Length: 470
Image 1 (tube, rainbow, N blue to C red):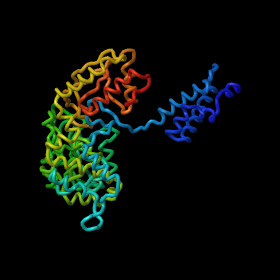
Image 2: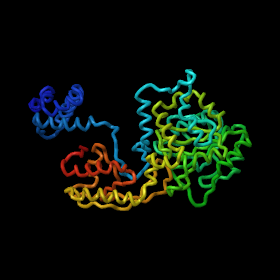
Image 3: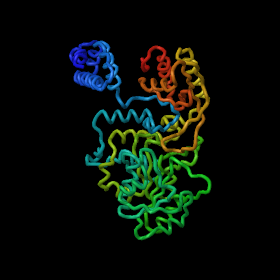
Image 4: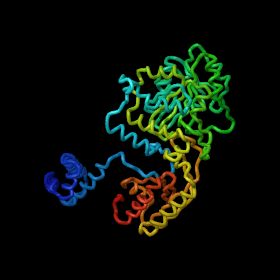
């Protein structure tokens, strides 16, 4: 065994290899040294645990293995992705991509100092919410607004502000659980209020709410079940009815509308998604929604409503822990400005542009890409095919949109292997695998990414490892 260990090259010997010298130049000397030591330690452990003789690689072979391993280890976790899944608000891929004006505003504010909490007119200390409050009120009709880091935070701080130690009445059919183990009952418990369930899973009546109100009641909460639907023998109570019940008992009515549409998505063939301004018109005291879903802005949670309640939220000690930074405010403000003209929003906000993309346009793009990669040796066949896209992000789960995809059938390799190699590309490409076919959905691929996608797919012909954009 000792003789075998003598055949393992030293750290210094391996560091002198051309492969590792090149990595040292691009990364860091200590990172490579640590990588070499880890690799050697793992090899020694393998030898110690082996029951049969093990052939030690030559120094050159070992340097190659270490270089390949370091190449994988040093890849950044957070990288750009071409989204070919057809899921527009893909939570795993960061949900809504930002509009160009929002990106520009973020860069401008991030690259220097900004008037985050300084009123430039008076020179006095100001509130960071002023960057977006006027826009939010203008677009929704609310009296006041505040922004926190996501809609779960919005729910928690709103409940903690108006109902700590009190009961909050919620329909059983609205006790939702969404991705990441977010469960409404748990959030309510963390906020310090007590859950008061009314009705049944499929039917809740106005009388159920009225009879549940008592001395311990702090608020009535309505929650839009964004990621599921109950159909058939059902009954829900409208926001307007709940407002009447709440105000008759001197209680606030909180409406969590979830994804947060500023316009009616029925124009895209999608129904039953509440429009934020309608909740304000119905008289809701506090309305909660996301900024990074149907609005198409940065990740944040938005709280709008009556001035007296928003002021209370601003004074809550949790606000400092949940507040957003200057980059989020810049991106959100720029996105909201686009909604002043609905036509402009549809042209500039990426998710709205995807939703309004004509099916004929998607078909043409899919056909062109299929034609350009048709001759690749690794392909068995490739063609444009009809399919369906989804909005995603917990919004309208049962509704789909017609789309066109590039359908890829590999030769001499499994479809999962091709999908894996594309995920390792730069930029990465993620599609969806159906049986023995890899589908690249054109609805979620930006038109300016079409040629990049072609180059990456063609590159699979030229190398055995993951394709890289030139």
